[in-house]
Length: 573
Ligand code: AMP
Image 1 (cartoon, rainbow, N blue to C red):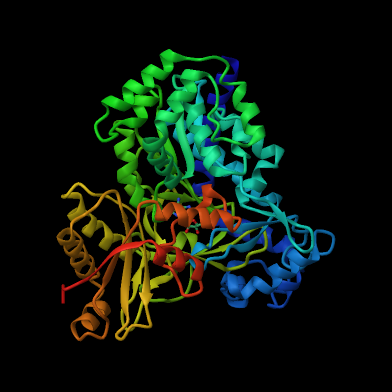
Image 2 (image 1 turned 45 degrees about the horizontal axis):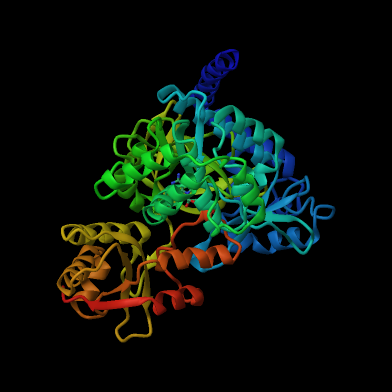
């Protein structure tokens, strides 16, 4: 009771603090920049730009260039190679203790980014703020959470720095762990399951733990919504094994990891035929698995994870599993640092916006339409799209995140932005330019054609067939069942017509771009894609299906090519 009261008081305090910060967003931004530059102005990186101790936004903008990861990669590499004892004063005054691996799956290999204690502090603030707003709308009591989380492999750089995902670094911080205890329900799975190493085994046991605690589960979450959808898609196939384990009171011999076996043995103490029967019954009575989550977890209050951006294609499937349980989209951040908090947790995930947190970094926004100069946080205009530029406490200065956001409104003095897409044009041959978002729109339109025939698009990606004459777009689909040739043809034409970019349409008309090709993949191909990503040292919880496969990503291309079962060319033009 006392614990609950303290928590409630803190929630109000945290909300109040956030309102104050955002009311004065302009001043807070100037102070944040000043603090970052005072700390790090004498570093090798910053001193070359002639700031000479000045910390105001105008001088900063005039002296320091906007950069991308490629521009600062040589500095980051030196930091990684030099190690903690010798890497101070390169980009930050204090030494950099660890490197984060950012997903960067498009190019097929992860990027290094500096990680330090300031990022931990920012994360604590963002988690508390997000929790406070969420808990006001959806209070949860003392239950448990079913979290589809997996640890990533950690290794050390040449200079001996720890390298892993930002989340993995966070877990080694006592401050962060304390915040997790205060803001989350305990995870139903033991640590051995989370840190098990083999994610097929971890996923199996996460589901099993969830079922064992089914009445206690109040929350289902993962970093990205993809992991939740993937978990329940897997459940559709493996549930008889899970039920059998519960009935027997022992873990399936398929799970071979010794630490997981012994941790699970403590939970599977005796046969539980009643629970096994109840789950079995639920699985038999559901229609096409609609409402699976509330059927399994009757006390679940909401489902939580990032559902925006490249996760949007999974929302419909998640909603299907969730039935009436609300979906709450999580916050906006990156390995580079945090950007915004979802302060309207009740809004549907398709409409989720993020209030930019003005003291976790210094933010600038490059308008997309005019391609003009970067503007400050309080100078952005509602309805306009911008590319985000961040300056962090971890040594990134005027760094282009590569994300496009649209300003939807203001929360006090700070903008609330919607995530639009990654900046990179994914498909381009000639005059045409199509982004990740354009591809998503086309796929959604064509998927409706398939849905009318009761087949779903499980996942998708694309590439440009540049060696063809003329070059063409290729879209890859994994579908939930077999579709007739007519349906595939119709989908293919619909895809082609749904790219409405003027450059594309005009080039298609004159055959400057060839007929779009739709390649249908074997069931389970995207599972193989994820296995490949994990095999390269990536974390499952960070996995985002690459929406376009570049020429540098030969291995991924091989996986796709080896799994094509049907191919079709558009006749739309
Ligand atoms: P990573 O580099 O693996 O840390 O991933 C960071 C990237 O994930 C960001 O730059 C965004 O492109 C994407 N991302 C993070 N949070 C969100 C969100 N809430 N909505 C959409 N995309 C997001």
